[in-house]
Length: 112
Length: 112
Image (cartoon, rainbow over all chains, first blue to last red; front, side):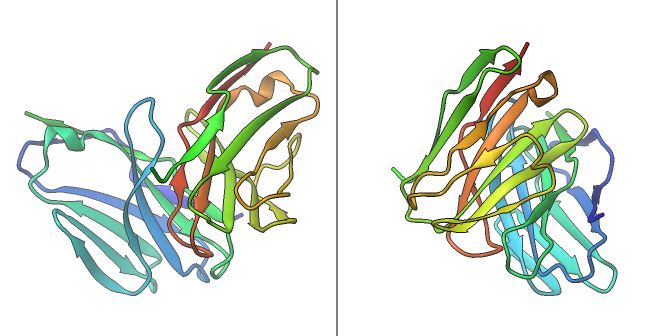
């Protein structure tokens, strides 16, 4: 059973703070990892993708991957109320095939 | 505008009445997937397609069929819907294997 786990929410942070979202996965052969944001009633939209160990930064977002620990995280700096959403971690569980497993999501609330 | 479209957006039907949910993308993507999203269970992959006439099962394929006769279209077929297939369904397409996915707006299906 291929599993992706995320830290249980909801997570509440004040505006301007750093939000830290975590994800662990069970399939050691996984090679590509994604963070999606989903607003209530909407479809998921891509925030970040990461393929190699280390950090990847895009604006206020930083994804961190540690394959040895089977851990991927998303940091959101200077959190804004518009960041309030559910964040989904997705893992491609067969090397560059099209089989994906999503985590259950972490709901983030950024308080003004 | 680059997009994934799904129809219908909302559907209420009765047990056993065959239905098809259409999905179309205008981005010339080879890779497409269907997901269902249920509270507490997250997004689960039903089927995916790597190319025309190439499809494979995801994690929850029971009760569903797909076909991929054209690159742009990937319909989801429920031959005999049951109440446990009541869910929110998303179609997604991807430009590369194991890569980022672009999601359609979703289809909310209720089976009575």
